[in-house]
Image (cartoon, rainbow, N blue to C red; front, side, top):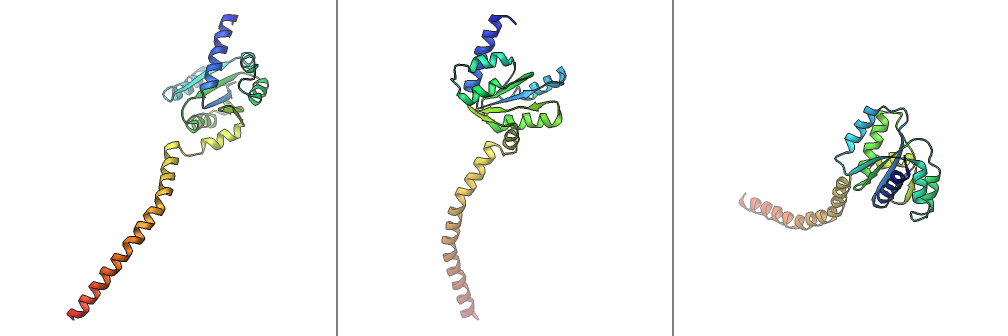
Length: 176
């Protein structure tokens, strides 16, 4: 790889890191090309970029400290072949895909990752993958918020119903 290609790769990496909601770093050693193609195919429709990076280029990108000291330290510790998935939408969706693929292919090891500019352990990616999707969480929140209102409406409507039942009982008693 010549200098011009490294500069282009560094620019693209910096742009992806700055815009991604989540960046999951993976060791893809011992995976075949068809398996990696399958992984990329699964992510193609989900607004995710998948890139193989050079660790030295990654270190140069964060050397100025613009991403924070924790990201700089993380990039300094990267070793071995590294594949990065950049998620620009819901972080849990990408975490689910990567985690599922790592379960199906044990050679696909999740390294530490970045949630925005915060360093995240691989085990925390597993926890993130087990969270419900954003839509489900919003639905659960709306259900929790509407529950007190439903109880209030039920309570307010109980009094007229009781009165109607009482009047019905009195009418039946008078008819007898």
